[in-house]
Amino acid sequence: MKIYDTKTAPTPRRVRIFLAEKGIDMEYVQVDLAKGENLSPEMRAKNPIGKIPILELDDGTCVSESDAICTYFEALHPQPSLMGTLPLEKAIISQWQRQVEMGLFMQVGMCFQHTSGYFKDRMTPVPEFGKEAGKNAAKFMSLLNKRLAESPFIAGDKFSIADITALCAIDFARVVDIRINPEHEHLLRWHAEVSARPSAKA
Ligand SMILES: N[C@@H](CCC(=O)N[C@@H](CS)C(=O)NCC(=O)O)C(=O)O
Image (tube, rainbow, N blue to C red; front, side, top):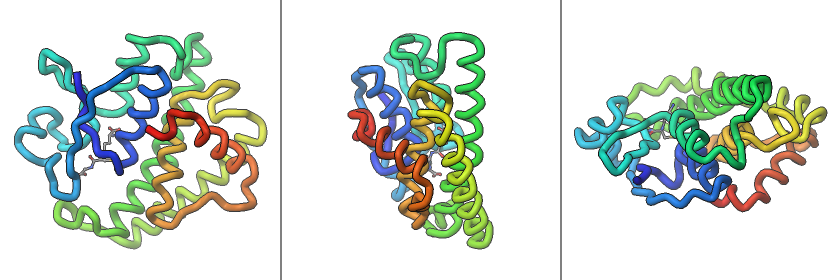
C-alpha cells in the first residue's frame, strides 16, 4: 500500500496528519506538482482529475480525495476516532469538516492558484478572484475564532478531522501572506495546541 504525496502541498498533509494520529505507517511516493508529474497518463490512470493524494492498494485499487482516503482508514482503524463514533458526533464533525473545507481550505487554495501563478501552465489565473478568495479565508478565520472561544476544538471537545483540515489550510495560507489576526486569541490558542501535537510534523 502506498500514497502518492507532495510534501509541500496542503491537501496530502491532511492525510499524513490523519494517519500519524492513528499511528499508521505508510509508504509515501513523492510527486513533483511543479513539473506536472501528477498530470502524466500513468497518474491520470490512478486519478482521472490528476490530483494528489492518491492511495494505491497492493492490488492496484486507487482511492483519491483526501476525505475518502481518511474515511477508509477511519473504518479500518476506528481508534483513535477522528470522525466521531456516535451518530450526532459524526454529523457535527462532518458539518465542520465540510464548512472548513469550503470556507477556508478551498479559499486559501483558490487564493494561491489565482494570485501566485504557480499553475499558470495548466489554468488561467484570475487574480481578482484569488484576492476575493483570500478575503473569504480571512473572514472564515474570524468565524473560527468565535467558535473556538466556546469550544476546545473546532467540532467540539475532541480533536477531529476538522482540526486537521483547518490546520493545513491556516499553515498553507502563510504562502499567500494570510496569517491569524493577532487579536484572534482563541484561534491562536487552538493553533498553538494543535501545532504542538506530534502529528503536526507530518
Ligand atoms: N479535493 C481533493 C483536492 C486535491 C488537490 O487539489 N490536490 C492538489 C495539491 S494540494 C493537486 O494535486 N494539485 C495539482 C494540480 O492542480 O495540478 C482532495 O481533497 O484530495
